[in-house]
Image (tube, rainbow, N blue to C red; front, side):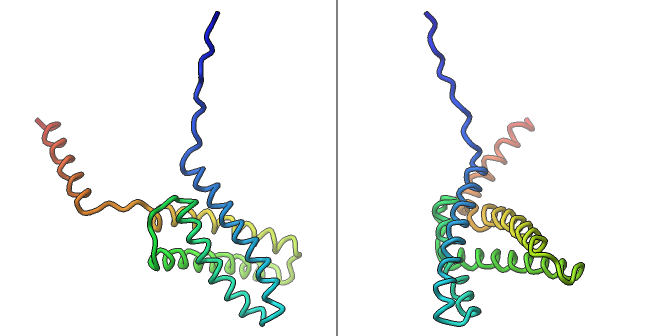
Length: 162
């Protein structure tokens, strides 16, 4: 009688798992924002409703991304400011893509507009994920940890040189 071997399946890459969580959190906030915008646009001017929803959804998404997407302990206004800057860059990128489209075609079809906008949004989202992961929610080392690492590296270098 042969014994069945338990094969462990390789775990999903932490980066891919974080990206999936990022998309789900961001998409969920986006859908909720869309519904909230519809509700508010009857009660106030659309521009004001959009500005309000953008600020609130950015704060909520930043908290979700920190806690869920990146599972970070970083909190505070600095994180919100950095995340807000990535949103502003994403907005500028998607707006630039649409302006570029209008420069090439004065009256593009709705399908072409949506294709350009969604493509630019996807690229901006990937860029935003990368910046949030590498800069905003990156693990920070303390001065003590950096000093300890330098000492270990120096000792290793001396040992290898000997």
